[in-house]
Image 1 (cartoon, rainbow, N blue to C red):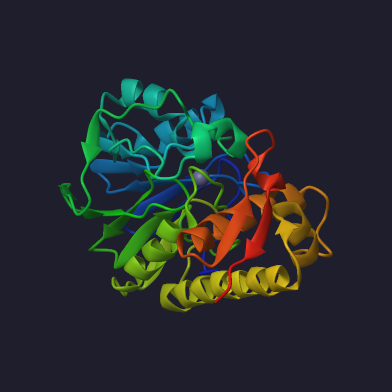
Image 2 (image 1 turned 30 degrees about the horizontal axis):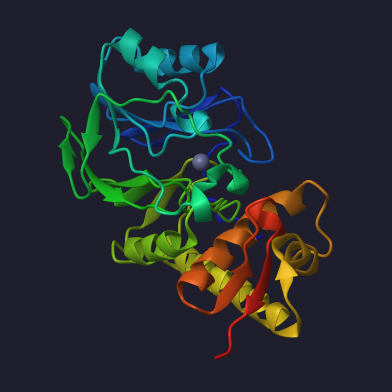
Length: 308
Ligand SMILES: [Zn+2]
């Protein structure tokens, strides 16, 4: 996958870097298949700092952030979504810096499994169930710092509570896990929702900013092109699923093996979650139906194409 990397110094695990006179980044040492080189924590402003995505609950990362903060005031801690690799450190950091945690209002997942069997969907891994904000933001809410201004953009899809933050002075958007250059976004039902994700991609297009600052990976310097690519990628995947179901009914797992024929074994379960997200979206649009069996996991349901 082509990565879009802005010119900047090499920065990895715990090292800090300046991305803009007003913006610094500390990268957590939690590199993995899901987090790439680690979670990006952004520090916006010099004397009245907004910390965006504190990252995982890790003492080394906490020290690295506090080194950058120094004796400056922290205006608030903003969490793009309640996954542990973004929100985990928020309580400790808020206590030490004596500030408030901001996040989007808690939302129930729009999707529930038939019969309420949420566990059949699995896919709730990584949610920080203990996460609580001090202040819940509204869609469109503006937060004004001494020298920066952030606009809350509710972008559900990866997670129901996901927000992006538009930074006017920097002509950019802090895009969390919604749009990243290094990888497509993991959409795992029921908390991940493909219908909402696609709508949220279209929503960001309207902002026409010059750069995205994602939760993982490097700065995206051509966000409009990347948004178009991400939308096209999902539509292509949707088309593949429909074509394969026209052949014969299939489970999400069978679809994953056909769609990712060369994928390493650990990628197939992740691919299945994304495919399930597409199938639920297509079901809402009456294009497919499932033989839903409450006694088996949703990824084992057999899906078929509806007559058009
Ligand atoms: Zn996430």
